Length: 137
Ligand code: RTP
Ligand code: MG
Figure 1: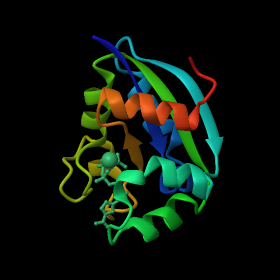
Figure 2: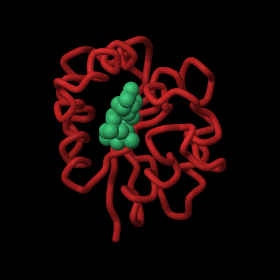
Figure 3: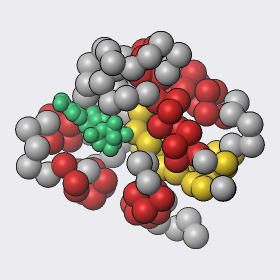
Figure 4: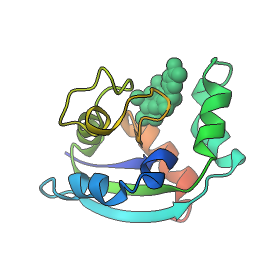
């Protein structure tokens, strides 16, 4: 089942020089293709759309500040079961609970600064791809 997903390498990943490390893990999965990619500091409007589901949660404002604190890399990845697959590569939200071998498990300690975002369903993926790459078909 070929799918596409929206992935963000968050500002902590970019600051720490982990773009290549994380992109490499995604790229090396058989048959997966990076089909769009951009480095950009995300503005408030973009982040409000992206994190609309979390409005009102206690972590919302600190999350928005963190996500606007420096450049992120946004990318679209296409391939076999890529939605579930990138989330498996990332590991659970809390990096301390994430197994070694996963991106968050290998590099993270703080829940907010957990290095990556990956769409959680086909519906989220289509919604999020439109936010970051509005010209993509
Ligand atoms: P993401 O959407 O970024 O892939 O992460 P996720 O599905 O694993 O986590 P989600 O529940 O959607 O939360 C979005 C992001 O908010 C930050 N967060 N901080 N308690 C906290 O301080 C807290 N909880 C969540 C994380 O950056 C999380 O990825
Ligand atoms: Mg999420």
